[in-house]
Length: 268
View 1 (tube, one colour):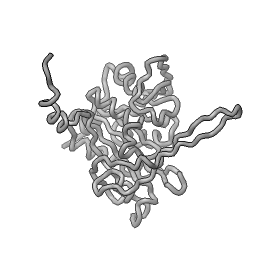
View 2 (cartoon, helix red, strand yellow):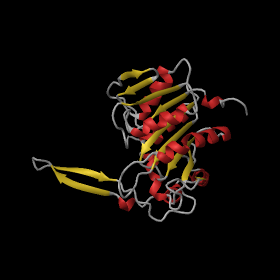
View 3 (cartoon, helix red, strand yellow):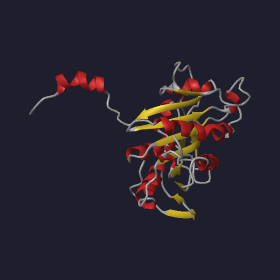
View 4 (cartoon, one colour):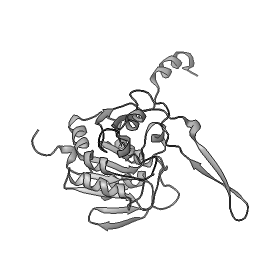
């Protein structure tokens, strides 16, 4: 193939860590290596854990930050909707990139993740979309985006050239440099994986008291890996690999549907 790939002709960026997040700056650098027409529409403030939520009970306000750069008082889903259907309605993007998130979005976390939701909304609108997340060091809790910055553009380019199906988004997670044992702080490579499952028993709910004595609660979502399976996203990232997981938006469990229909289907 000669010349740029058609999917790399117009890119929309978003995230859930907020418009001033370090990972979004890394994503801008990644996108700039792929395309000259890059738009950014990101939340005004952090929206981690917002999932695929949509703002319906209050207005969404847009603030222009510069040429093709906007912030939104809303969720990642709001941002992608406004980008596709308002800010870029005359020439929609050919690719949506969401991230680079501070912290991984693996296994069950994808259901909570605003980063994944940004790519999910793009996919629902018929635009190929990729979510990108960077593991942080479990010891220092510091986010080092060097692996994402080093490999992000090449991985996106390869994924776009290969292509993927309708109603599928790609979830890319980069390991923390200190997880890449024997790789001089770099990832060991790339693996296409399946979604894993965390030990949800690691969830911690901490009760505290405000100055008036009333209780309030903090959710602690453990980032522990447990004992993941051989081909899961959890194991790949834990072992220092970049994980690429195709996620399908159709949540229908077809085996159960086929088994249940002969018994339950009934005409009234």
